[in-house]
Image (cartoon, rainbow, N blue to C red; front, side):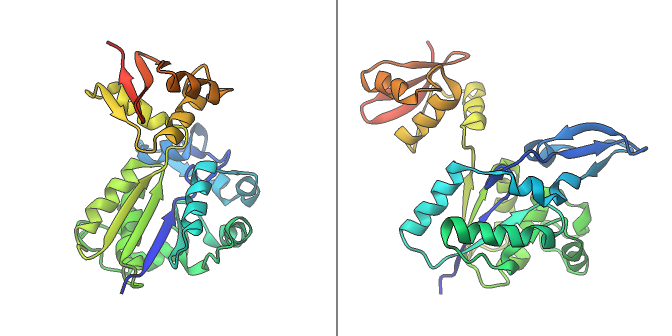
Length: 276
C-alpha cells in the first residue's frame, strides 16, 4: 500500500527570516553570525559553540516571509489532488514553541491539517533523549546522535521515524544539497522506499554558481520559462522587468548574466550558455 508524505525544511526552504546562528567563543562572546545555509556546513573550532536563540524566537519566525517558490509547489500539489501527508523537518529548537504557529500557517495558507507528530525539530531536547536510547542504523552505527551533523540527523529522522510510521513514498524539500545527499545515503538501507529529493533554490543563486564553475558549455532549464523568469529577475539588468528580458529571448536575442554566462532560447528550450 502506497503511503506518501511531503517533508519540508523550514528556514530558507519554506520561510525566510532574519534569524541567524551565533558562533560564540569560550567566554560566550559572539565571533560571527551564520545564515541557516552557512550553519549546515560550518565546523566549530576549538572553544567555539553555537547560540540558537534567534530560532527560539517565535516573533522572528512569524515575521518571516513564506517563499513564493515553495508556496507554488505546495499549491500545485494540492491543485492536483493528493492524499499525502505533510511534515516539517527543521534544525530549530523546542518544537513546542514553533508547532502551533506552523499548524496555523498550513491551515490558513493551504487548508492543510499539519499534524503535530509530523513536525520534527532536531534540537528538541525530548527528541535528542529519544534518539540517544536508540540503536542507529547503517551507516551511523557506533556514533551517538549528538555526534552527527545536521544532514545526518535529518537522514536519521527519515530512516527511523517516517519509515517506521509506514511511509514508503517520501518527498523531501530542502535548500541544502548536503542534507539531500545524506538522505540518499540512508535510503540505501531501505531500497523499498521511494525517495524524491527536491532542491529549493528560489533565486537560482546556487545553481547558477554551480554552472559557472562547471565544465558544461550549456544547461537546459527543465522548468523552462518559469526558471528563465526567476533568473532574469534575480541575476540580470532585467530584474525590475523580467518580461522585457523574456521578450528579448523570444525574439532570438540573449541576456548576459555576468561572468561570461548568457541566457538564451533555442526553439522552445530556455538554456544557460557560456560565452564563446
